[in-house]
Length: 324
Length: 280
Image 1 (tube, each protein chain N blue to C red):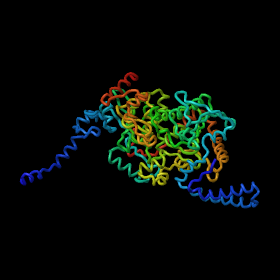
Image 2 (image 1 turned 60 degrees about the horizontal axis):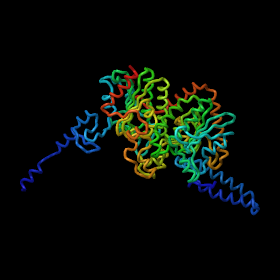
Image 3 (image 1 turned 180 degrees about the horizontal axis):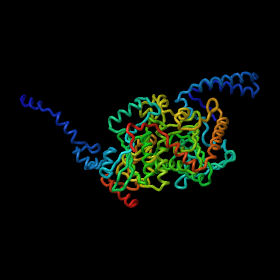
């Protein structure tokens, strides 16, 4: 895959290039000085640390959408020992924006559902940019009901700009299927772990995002509206995206503080896109720890705890008079 | 001639216009001038073009609950400011303004009442308060109302007209209210209690994609805008104009999303009919 660089990653591009030239040279025998590579790699690490120690919220938004970032199928292929993809919503279609299946995770049988983005234009059109139609939400629900029946945990991977906003989606009841998923997931008699790996876009993300443990990668985002959407509605100007990103509190760190997510999955230096295998390893361990934790809780209690978890979210004042 | 002109100038219409403003109402759709009292007696439906005006939560209560039976619950609850949202306008300021403008504390009113003599719990979204969007208070009061119904085994009726869906100023906290309210509807389902959802103009976004569409029986008023994505967002996505009637009640009815289209004047009667069949 061709490496792409965000504006603020540009300083890394130069060093990357130098390193690869030297490495190619080394292979061909035209370059002998190996120390230069070591030195450059050190320089790269330092520069990366410098850039990543001071990221703005808007930069994190850009990272969550990075073209080189691993997508749902990349995680699935790399962290499950076995995986069989299943298809269709048993009603109308097989939504390609959503991947479902069953797999083995460190010896445990699990059910999997996740939104899938494409890597190039052709793939993105096929995957609908990871924006599911009602068939996609039904497809995800179907695998969750299967998990409930078989008493196996559900793992969902969230990475979507949002639910598909087109005519077909409305005709088929986008609002209805998302609502049904929220209710079914809240009541599902089996453990659910949700992992936000990239963009957690509003109701479209939440549609497969209600669970016992919500894990979020360090440079992923979760928001009620995109910073672009928020800027255009409240500021009436796209130049306010950075400010909107900051106001929305959409980073993993902010959401952990607000009590919305349970765990931040650390990403390798420079972000998941710079070191996929490390990202898979870190994600797998976080999932494993959380599964191990909740597997000990009996299901009835787990569902009640899940209810209470969402029940208490919100910030309000009772007001002077207490009625009732 | 000159003398006559002077006489014209003397006319001072100011007072008359003010009186008119109080008594008359101009229909937003057909532009006809309506006698306000008559329009309100007709539940804010224009007798000429049948356009449905937006009712406030308390007007809804007067229309649906048996006279004098409504006992409001958690009336003074107000929203916090979890994100400390400042932006173009601070959320705290926005809330104050909206309270002043609408006389409401939030976009939802909840309470216990009788409908056709049957004890029920009602939650009403008021679209006048920040577009009837769902923040912490809407989520919490809806959830409490549903739990209240659960404890007493009362049927639960919700009137939802929320234009903006989620409330941006509360960020993900607002999004999570979708999960919270859907979860409590799940509890009603498990307990075998009836939940009637009435969709009014407009029911969109986060409200549509949570409790509004989870009704066991879904009633909608004619011509209401109902859907997930806003029409403008869809137009921008597909880059073409939307067909007329798209995302309107009748369109949704045709697609099997709604049980009953009810004229506003018959709404109470229709709800009572359902309650009578199941609860008497």
